[in-house]
Length: 122
Image 1: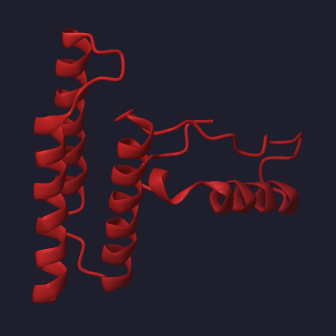
Image 2: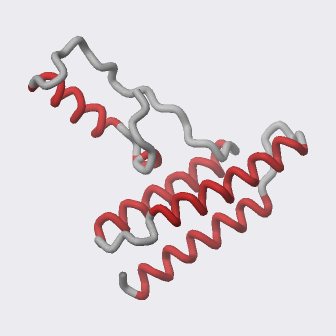
Image 3: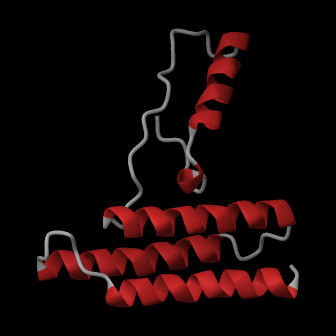
């Protein structure tokens, strides 16, 4: 990892913790604010620790873009949790068929950038 990329990643990490420190819940309830602050800190630590051994520049840049997108969406909507997405439903395809592979490919392409670190649930 180059020095500029490392500075960028560490800057994002610090920015997230600054945001968590100043975070106020949209409802204004103190307990929710505390819970949301803790979620922001835990989520940042989990994802940064998960990706700390990544060395591929393209993967690092994707992680940086995902981080920026999640920060911007969280600040814009006032919600620290990832926004739900509506992915194309799986059809009635045979599990190992070409149709199923095509549907899986479409679902992966439809997944927004801010959810790339999450595994497919459905």
